[in-house]
Image 1 (cartoon, chains in turn orange, red):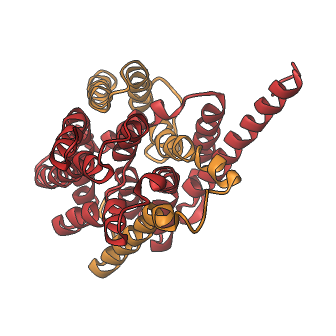
Image 2 (cartoon, one colour; image 1 turned 135 degrees about the horizontal axis):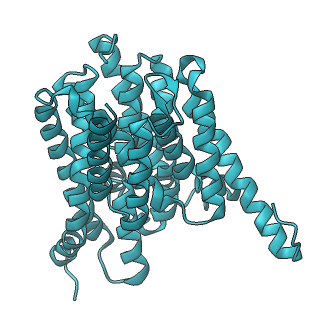
Length: 113
Length: 238
């Protein structure tokens, strides 16, 4: 997986993403007093950003294997993902989830491969 | 009695276990960045300039797939939209800081710094807002940068048979699970995830942004349905 991007483009992406992210962080800290509160509708919608976005980042990685949908027990990523989800739910710990998922993937790849 | 120094140190103490959890996350960011062909300087540059893990990993993945630059940037911003919520929620406590301090404190705003500081600010009126927050946020920043550097150094040496790219969704998963706290956030997660799977083949890798919008919509919808059904004692539900 090597990117086809040039150095300049990559730096522009980093810069634009960084400036935009900083603006999001600064938004209400800087505006407070001028704008009393976040509009209620916006606040309600923002509450769901982490769950929606993170799930959208996770699920495709678990259910696709080599670019094809693989909803079968023969897909080690899916099984390791389910195991890691159980550990994440039990422990709410990043390190424990990482260890469980990676170990699960290594063992399953060995067994199924 | 609280002094700037004592408040800073008490922030550091609370942040210590959290920085341990950030360590593997930052290392994954470093490993992943060099893994898709970014230079060491760009990998660390991204951690300094963007300083938001989940969005960095999402961007790195899209860069590896050569998604259009505009989509990569838009994805970073969508993933980081939650920072607006933190900014709004912590703003009253930073009201008396100078514009320069507001600018500096905002740069350090992260999920962890926000959550820990807000808890303290709500419970203790005496604590120095600035120094306690810095005590939490600065160690997190230092750990994040150091972990990225370690990841970059490791990244070049790790064999591909280890499937280390799988660590990326695992980190997201570890952050996702605590974010699902009720039926509405659960709906946002299920609908967002499913949409991303279905829309995986969408041109320009727009699947993630679409999934975010649909998932957020589902969360809002479920929340208003449950609110209405409680109000009217309607047993039909959703």
